[in-house]
Figure (tube, rainbow, N blue to C red):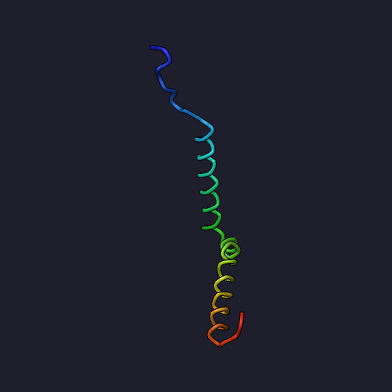
Amino acid sequence: MTGMAQPVADVTAMNLIVALALLFAAGFFAAWALSPRLRAWIEKPNYRFQRDARAYDRDLSEGKRP
């Protein structure tokens, strides 16, 4: 019955990629959660988009052409 036993830790390239992706995701989440400055920098484009969308809607309602 040789060759039928599975290795205890099957380390394949796919498992390594998934593990590294999870490690990076956890690291980025921890940095985001612990650093208010970093969080503000990451979220700045969202706030800018919302501000511009409100200005666009306001201009349209006032009859201004975009």
